[in-house]
Each structure stands twice: as structure tokens, then as C-alpha cells.
Length: 171
Image 1 (cartoon, helix red, strand yellow):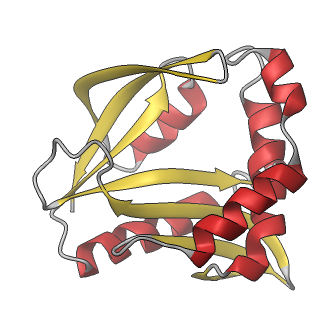
Image 2 (spheres, helix red, strand yellow):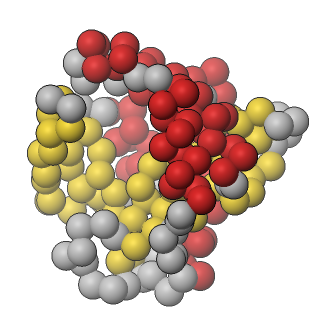
Image 3 (tube, helix red, strand yellow):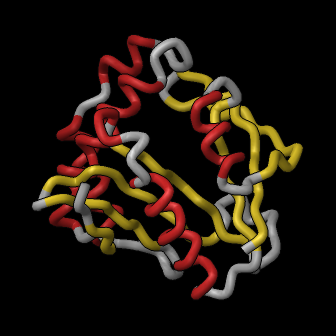
């Protein structure tokens, strides 16, 4: 399969939102409330992505994998959000690959690109958060050298509870 990876622009917002919503709706069934997943809207998510891409914070980047204009997946990275890490800690904010494109190396390539960006920005370590019940993603991260760091957090968004565990990797 031929695809390229590049930094996203606000013009990519709809394609990113489509991958984002569709992967959440397929991958998180049984882990997140179905009613919440059913309400997700590509159009609303596209508006949020467009705004985020127009106003990216320093050190952050969003990369997309695409094939002939079709967005196959994306990866977002930047400074650690929790602010508790040293200034040398970056974060893998998100990584999603369209359901029908998984298992083809796209996620691995996106992650490598994102971690390379963090290295270039001077980060020495990266963290990520993953749903405790998300075993396929946990296995993927562990296969790439990420290790559970013992951190946990529970967030509530739109009356949905997200029970997450932290992972870290040295860059």
C-alpha cells in the first residue's frame, strides 16, 4: 500500500474527523457508553479539528497518513498536558488509523513520525494515556517499547467516565 505522511492543515479537518469518529465508534464499543458513541458527529468533530489546526500550540504537531487525498490515520504529539512532567516530557495525544487500514504499518509509521518530532523539539521522554480496557492498543504500544508507568487517571466528559492508565517511553 502506498501512502505518505505529512503535517496536517485545517483543510484536513473533515478527513481527520471522519477517521476519529469512525474509529471511536468501532473500536470503543463495550468500553465507552454506546449512547455517547452514537452521538458522535463527524461534522462537529471536524469543526473542532479545524479550530485546533488553525491554533496549534508551540511544540505540537498533527501528522496524517494519506493515499491519493484520503486520510488513513493521524497522530498528534506535543508537550505533556498534565504539566507534572519535567519540561523534557512530550506526549502522544492521539493515534488513530481507519478500521479497514489497520495492521498495515500505518500506525507504526505515524508513531515514529510523531516521536521523531518530539525528539527534534528536545523532549527526552514521552507519555500517553490509554483506556484501561483497550487491550488491542495496549498491546500495540507495548510492542513499540512503551511501558506502563503506574500512573492512572479517571476523567469525566459529557457524563462518560474514561478510566485510563499511563505509559512512557524514553526518546
